[in-house]
Length: 172
Image (cartoon, one colour):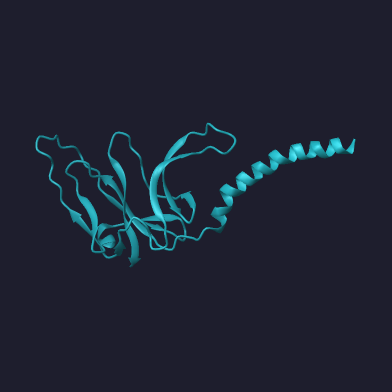
């Protein structure tokens, strides 16, 4: 009678242990991951046709004027907005273009401590339950983990209001 009980307990324990192992493999790296040490600046705005274009050259943010393509119909433009992401608090604060120009940037794809800012779809599903849907978000990836970050991006399907990463803040 006791041998049957041991087999039954092992039969129940194996699936439970497998689920715990999968959950630990997903969430434990987040606990032990190194934090991001660099803030970054990004902008949102409507710069599809003839809008101002911003880029980092030699560590400084510059504004490049773009002419409207010949024969295109002028459309009202949204004002570009600049934000600085604070890595310590996972918050953003709007800054002016004049304030952003005063900063020194590293426009590399990857921060000096190995993080990247990514756009993409993330499924809100949790194993083993599926069907949670998708949201378009901004993610910080590095150290073997990926986590959604708080950025101000109003998505309007009828306008080209884009998130544009400008650079890692090296000094203020």
